[in-house]
Image (cartoon, rainbow, N blue to C red):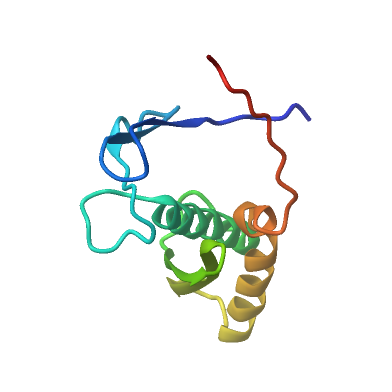
Length: 144
């Protein structure tokens, strides 16, 4: 199968504090969205890495759970997932320490036991969960 790519870009002007930062996604869902230079981002009208990872994980998990449950397109069931990212400061800087998924679903004709088993499979198999266990590659170039 041919790989599918999606892109996001950040335009960062200035140093670690001040300046301008915006993030744009290929889909256009985010277009020049304000990006905070503070880590961790506290109560702010700007987004940051932890919030974007939380959104990606909640979205990916909900999709995986729906697939694992084999819900038809016309299903009346619902899945509400929130992801909470916990950040901690270490000697080398801030790091994402953990992510907690909270899922509440209303799925007719599914037992609690089946739902829990399916949710555990979805947590393991969702692409963001897999990514968080993946190797990360990089190319870097300094332009003059």
